[in-house]
Length: 92
Image (cartoon, rainbow, N blue to C red; front, side, top):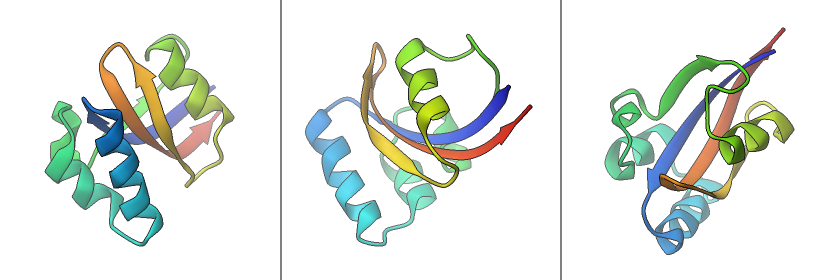
């Protein structure tokens, strides 16, 4: 199984929560990723491309596996900070 996801990575939980509230209010996920994310993927609107089991840290991968396509999960804490994760695909 492989998954595709985009994310916004920030250092503070409060910022992640504020961004999630903006997204749920209609703000554009990709635009917020470009503006706020600390990950190099921000230049692509947070897109991480396709990845398989074991390629992402456990908390991130588990969240993506459980999420439905198009769903935004978060905030999710990892060793890198706080993520808002948007699952964008799944394939066998």
